[in-house]
Length: 65
Picture 1 (spheres, rainbow, N blue to C red):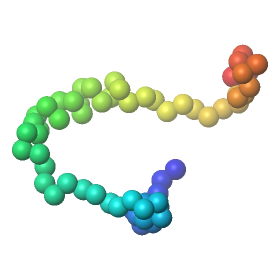
Picture 2 (picture 1 turned 135 degrees about the vertical axis):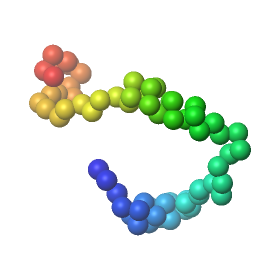
Picture 3 (picture 1 turned 90 degrees about the horizontal axis):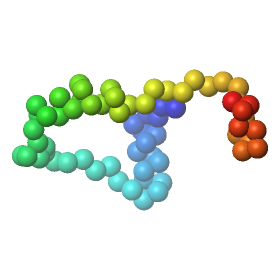
Picture 4 (picture 1 turned 180 degrees about the horizontal axis):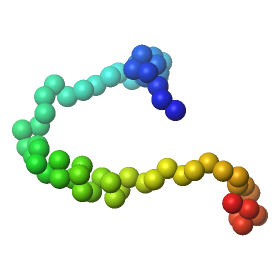
């Protein structure tokens, strides 16, 4: 599911929340470490999407998946 920025803004407002973003990046931020993490660690952490298919949510029939 994808939502537009306008839809997210409306949902936030409806629940009494506000859009908050930092005014600037932290001085302590290490850009090299961030890039290394995104390149090497994130692909391992990111779970592959499960394919939708036949299955059962029944706990009594676990083999039906």
